Amino acid sequence: MIRHLRVLVVDDDPTILEMLSTFLEGKGYSVASAANGQEALETLESQPFDLVISDIEMAGVNGFELLRQTRTSDPQIGIILMTAYEESHPLSAALRAGADGYISKPFSLRKFSLIFEQAYWNALSRDDWWAKHDDGTRDGTHGM
Image (cartoon, rainbow, N blue to C red; front, side):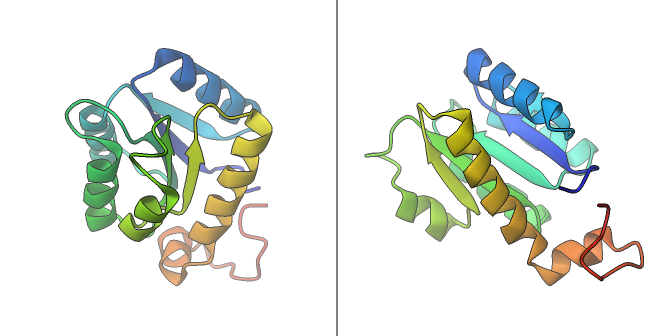
């Protein structure tokens, strides 16, 4: 685990937002939250993040649009999409759009942890991620 990992959680459901934020903070990550896609874009403009976890189905800027705009401005950021509408937003659509992870609601925190860790390692496997976070160490112990 990289201790200084910065995570943005985006969901219009305050229960999910609070649950994931509390869970990730308990794991030692720095967490910010946004109640919708527009708020998330504004937050992403004002501070850097390593991973974004976003609901897909939101009014205004939805999760796919947030992903598209985020990838344009910060291609190396890890992105996990969540949905309660799997039949409308299948895994294949999320992966084609560029998501590093995908989870259907409702989910257990155990399942979320697995998806989160996979997206985390996907982001770390990108050379551009290391360029963004390079502190002179490239031996695999960065920030550990």
